[in-house]
Length: 143
Image (spheres, rainbow, N blue to C red):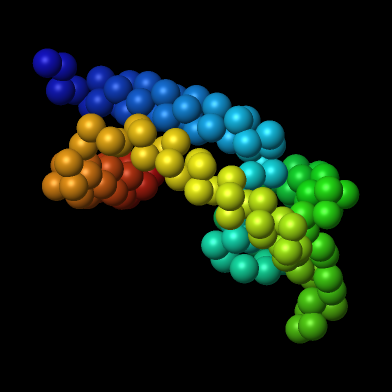
């Protein structure tokens, strides 16, 4: 077995790509694109947020986040409001229809993602997460 760092990175990269493909397929089956799903999921779990904060949390550029929010607003899934504490900021929040849609969509996506790890025991999942976190921290430390 090749234990070199370059091989470990390659295996991680391939595994990530496989997981990303599965996640994209799951999201596409919900009838929405990744950016729309990510915005709605972020608002579901974080609550109402300024537009720029959503973009930072889901790694979208300001142009991409604005386009996604415009699209979701046209569909009646989100609304923008002026911030009460910062006149420059616009706050985005889910509408009741948006909340209902993303709750149902997220439950299905969560089930789909569970299939990727169903072969791991609880103990194996804990070890896996611990090792991935350590791997990520080491990669950041070396920058």
